[in-house]
Length: 124
Image (cartoon, rainbow, N blue to C red; front, side, top):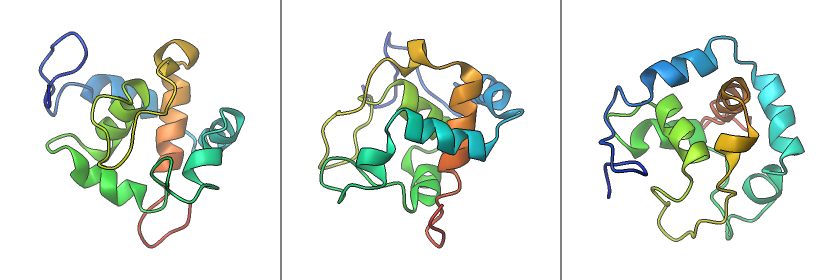
């Protein structure tokens, strides 16, 4: 199902627009960074060698182009909540699949704000 989420709903540019906008309304990338370390995402996505999971470096640029017409923010939201939906080629779904239950939408917004600091010319 390349363009549908679990349950079969069609994904388009508006699919996550309102949820993402609400999550990002007061998002703080510093809090997001703290959450990334608390959840130990850094072990695979920052400290790893890229063999187990994609590294965060350049993620903001990658996310912006990954699933048009989704924005980078919408793609990251989807990737956090449904990590197995669209795997990056060469990787398996090693991410926890319960962030929808474990994190509030505001926490997800903080994490997205943090992930957006990883542009190709930045180190986050």
